[in-house]
Length: 101
Length: 171
Figure (cartoon, rainbow over the protein chains, first blue to last red):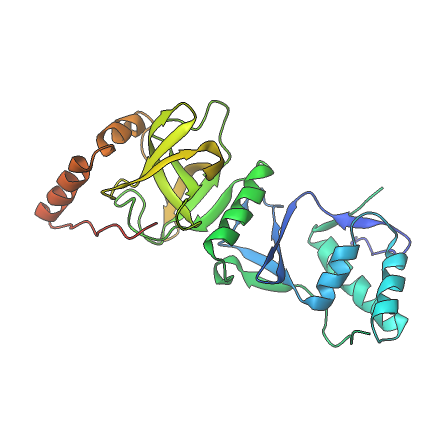
């Protein structure tokens, strides 16, 4: 069964990714297949996703990340929470982030 | 306050569609190789023709202990352009590596170890894996490639056989 993202837990980037900033975009190269493959699919993050990614660094629970973003974005905290959980779930399912600590 | 006006799903993009300049490609490749993983990308140019052709997909691996060595085909950062090239080490001496494309008349100069990214361990053409070359050939090719007469001779032979080698244009 797929594990659900939990706001009380701490997450961070997996060791099986390479992350670079290219032309102002965050590019994530998955290494889960054992190779960095430019012939395969890579992942880029838009500005909102980038703000989330930069905070998901293994240092604090996800709920703290949501609070920080709520202070920065002009949007209801519930909407931000749903957005963060949605992104994290997708990255978690693709093994780009892992639970830390 | 920022507006939350964008969905934050990751955008999935084929790697070959990324707008990578030479420095970005080199940085990406180095970051992957530093994790001990191989890196695959499409090679451009004809300077390693006929062994590696324009559009071949090459796999670069971290150097093994004792490497790089004379005869190895390597990915490296060209000191002039900052771009990634795939050429052969034709001489290794005192920590400096003289690099040259098999089909290029001139060499790239003697570069330090830092400029070398990784070893070309394999390649594919139109989706099919191809053998790079037998290991014993590599130092022989390096010795022959040091001067341009061998490259000129190969071009003449290919022309005589009706398979003219294209002139090197980077790569």
